[in-house]
Length: 71
Image (tube, rainbow, N blue to C red; front, side, top):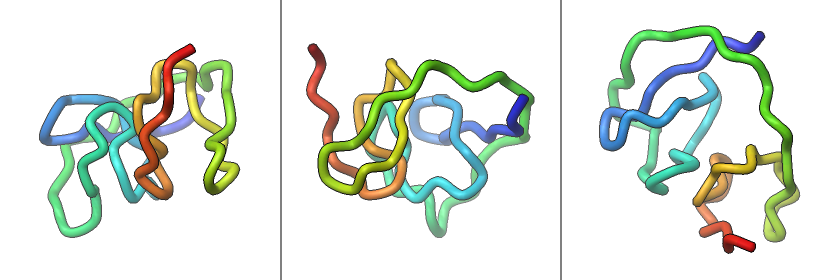
C-alpha cells in the first residue's frame, strides 16, 4: 500500500510528491491538501509526454499536467 493525499479541488487521491492532480489537472504545489489515506497501486499506464506511470482513471499526468486521452 502507498500513502496518498487528496486534492482540495476535486477530492481525488494524490501521491505525496505529485505536482498536478491526475483527475482535475490542478497544480498541487503551494496548496494545502487533505489528510493521508492508504491505498494499493492500481494498474498503470504511461504519460506520452514525460513517461510517468499513471493509473487507469487519471485524466491528467500527476507529474507534468498533460491531459490523458481516454481510449
